[in-house]
Length: 450
Image 1 (spheres, rainbow, N blue to C red):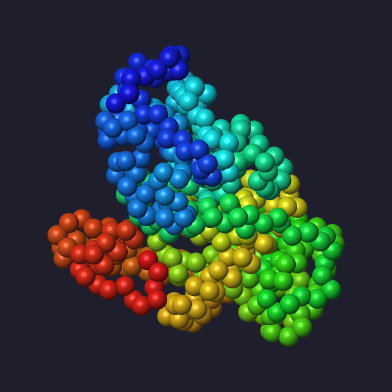
Image 2: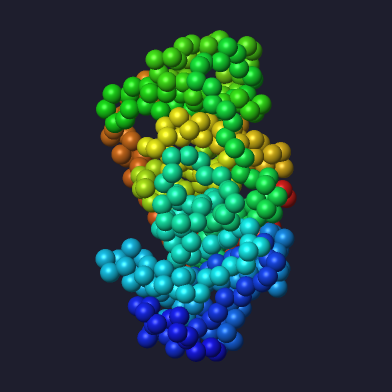
């Protein structure tokens, strides 16, 4: 244990923790990992990342990044155990107690070596300490600049001379949300790619006129006014060959497709109506939807709702979330009101990148591919057409069917709870998978990713 030093004087949490855990800075280290605050074991031994979360970091996630203790710098944004607890005061409160403490502690103690080329932050508190950004849900898997305002620049951020900040989930959260382990592993796998300048890539040059022709596979996205009258604002297209088009509505014209074509969109029902007006002949078009492709492969990953879109798809199906795992470019979604052209281009580029990643996954999982092509893809087309032209609904019959299905769900839940002996939630992917794969001994199908 180490008593607090003079640098702690003036911190609003100074009197709420007697001991501190200093940073472990390694001269020559290229990476600095920043966490939230020390736990009981860290406080007792005066070293960061030696408790349960630290063991998970050292045993699983640092090896994915090609890192090992002793060759990487380690730090926390709060260096004491406040009130003898692992919990910190909440962020975003009126008194800004947590923010003030983080700012003070960082100024007093954070001294990464000059060799540092990348800073990896875990969770909200660490993200705030390095960037001033409070939305780790939005920025998980992406790079940000250090500082307090740069995240709002009207461009896609690319690393410069100053070490960038890679945002990822606090590993302690995985004990409660194990379905987030896949995205988190992909975050850590980016570390060597960032250090070797393989990721992120610059967004391709954006062309503003309609293409004369298009390849057999390309992505398509639209921006339109909504709610109210659905009026097209612009379209964006990206090809696997690297061409990107963003065309404003007045310049959009029909384009003839040469032979059978696969058009990829994220949430096809939103784009279907405009696509049918632009691309001909439609009879030769196959529509693939990256959102539904992902839902078949990874039905339980990232099911929380987005902070800024509580009515939209779960994060695991949103393009921002999928792009954080598969897009060649850095985050673009924050540009929705700052740079509309690049925002639209980013949607198209990320869609084609996610599509290619999913196709590689389907190569290893033919059973899921069969489910998608035989059942899900046709259903998406029906949903898209019904939204475009409308559908008459027999409301009394529909309400009766809903009651019937709801009753069936209740019966199934009661039977499941009776069978396992505890109140299992059949709507919870982690609970059901744990019961089937761990407790019941069911084997994961060959080639299936869990």
